[in-house]
Amino acid sequence: MLELYQAEGCPHSETVRETLTDLGVSYVIHNPRRPGHEGGDVLNEQVLDAMTAIGGEDMIPFLVDTDRGETLYESEDIVEFLEEHYA
Image (cartoon, rainbow, N blue to C red; front, side, top):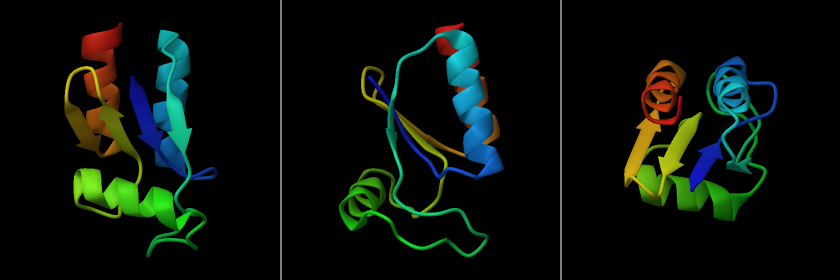
């Protein structure tokens, strides 16, 4: 299962969402915060806590691939991973 921690309005998150859509991959989306350079307002404290517990950072986008045991930050790295494993 793929889980994407992201923010609506974040261009980096949008890039990842578009790649997932183009590849026809199903995923679960989590919105821990609003976008912002210094980190936007927290929308869901539990989701934010889960994200930082899994990945160690408060940064979006963040992809978790539970089937492969992989976690990735940085939209370019995420897109490359998705194209390599899901294209």
